[in-house]
Amino acid sequence: MADPKGFLTTPRQEWPRRPVAERVRDWNEVYVPGALLPLVSGQADRCMDCGVPFCHDACPLGNLIPEWNDLVSREDWRAAAERLHATNNFPEFTGRLCPAPCEAGCVLAINQPAVTIKNVECAIADRAWEEGLAPPAPPDRLSGRTVAVIGSGPTGLAAAQQLTRAGHTVAVYERDDRIGGLMRYGIPEFKMEKHHLDRRVAQMRAEGTRFRTSTTVGRDVEAAELRARYDAVVIATGATAWRELAVPGRELAGVHQAMEYLPLANRVREGDLESSPLSAAGRHVVIVGGGDTGADCLGTAVREGAASVTQLDIYGRPDDERDEDAEPWPTYPKLYRLSAAHEEARDLRTAPAADADARLFAASTLRLTGDADGRVRSLHLVEVDAGRRSVPGSERTLPADLVLLALGFSGPGRGDGLIDQLGLELEPRGTIARDADFATNVPGVFAAGDAARGQSLIVWAIAEGRAVAAAVDRHLTGGTTLLPAPISPYDRPMTA
Ligand SMILES: Cc1cc2nc3c(=O)[nH]c(=O)nc-3n(C[C@H](O)[C@H](O)[C@H](O)COP(=O)(O)OP(=O)(O)OC[C@H]3O[C@@H](n4cnc5c(N)ncnc54)[C@H](O)[C@@H]3O)c2cc1C
Ligand code: SF4
Picture 1 (tube, helix red, strand yellow):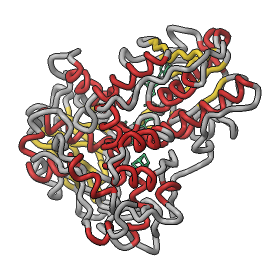
Picture 2 (cartoon, rainbow, N blue to C red):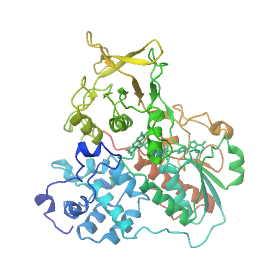
Picture 3 (cartoon, rainbow, N blue to C red):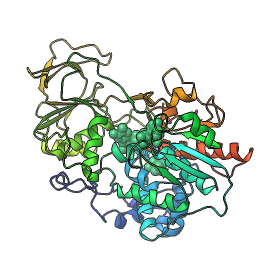
Picture 4 (spheres, rainbow, N blue to C red):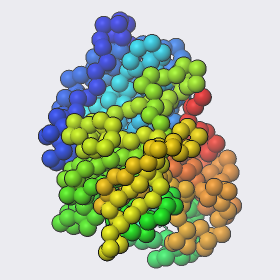
């Protein structure tokens, strides 16, 4: 702690976003380039270096937050980068995308704004790349053992990097044509530019990790054959089975899942398509689902030039302040949060029928109706109370010629045959069952990330990848590992 009074003298200041009118005309990240670095040492100085840093526990990776805050406040970027990478393989991803449960657990947050931990993390990661402080770290010698990792999202990448660095020969199998999982084709560029992902993949290649893209395990390669070829297999295939909207009119043209819509927009950015066949340009868009995936659809539709965009959330509007009794510090509270996409929607008034930020809270979809050609034209909804009972007389109709469903995901898909070919046992909710060592019922086959935990967050995915790597290393070496395991399969976010 370079300045013991920093938290008294310096107010919280976040990485400023670019003006809305400017940023919706492009797909680059929403932040002002170069504006974080001048702020960040002063912000890190606000850390009180508490005796018991609750932020450690609130971060699934156990990031050493007070340590790197101190190093950043002293501008020792080399040591900060080393401490950060000791617990997080991909801090530039979490520094941009994590909802920062650590900040909800920051001791300062008891009675004043938390330290901007996520911003400090991002600044260290970016600085590390700029100054060559994140070079490839290939192993000194190879173990002669082989591992197949199925899925190249944050779980698979973290597992592969840990196991490669431990000396095992690792191949990552990915059914998409590019590496990255939801970070590649789900999350839009304005939240994280893809060059951050490409740079890590290049680092991993240089360390020796092999990548097999456009290869669906279960279809292009028999899962059992893969099991026989490798000493261990890690399944990190994500939770891609999306939830449906069971209302009349679901079958109409123009009604799509968020993960049908977002990948096409991302492919335009990658240069694969000139324009998206599902583009929102000129359309009245209604997004059903109030979560982050819905917000990503909102920001994308705004940039594509939608005529209007409204987002429906079945839950009521959350409070602005933490309810100390229901969700006490240091848990992560459900609060009204204005994401960059919502800020854009508010300033541009994209939803004439909705609240200022394009969201209609406590809104339940009743049915969709279309025109003579079978194309959706309207969405009919009703307001609901906390028990999801309709409020009499509150029915209304929104114009809708593109309806996007962002209702979450239930677990891994079954269509590729992977689960059935291996004979994997599932939990009642559809995720892959595993024991305390991340091992499935099939010897040598491990499961991690959203495929086993259920729909989660990137920080949890990286923690799962690191932890499963430790379990696999133990399995391959006959009982010992030096790899860290930040979580167990049974750990859950800190909630009230
Ligand atoms: C639109 C959207 C936005 C999100 N935004 C955020 C955010 O801002 N912050 C955050 O923390 N979290 C966010 N999340 C959640 C986060 O992306 C996930 O929790 C995380 O990506 C899960 O990582 P994973 O590696 O387990 O799975 P995934 O990222 O889903 O990766 C799984 C990979 O496995 C591949 N695969 C599947 N089956 C096979 C097979 N048979 N053979 C070969 N490959 C296969 C898939 O193609 C995919 O690439 C978002 C999720 C969505 C849908
Ligand atoms: S990974 Fe997320 S929870 Fe952990 S320190 Fe970074 S922002 Fe906080």
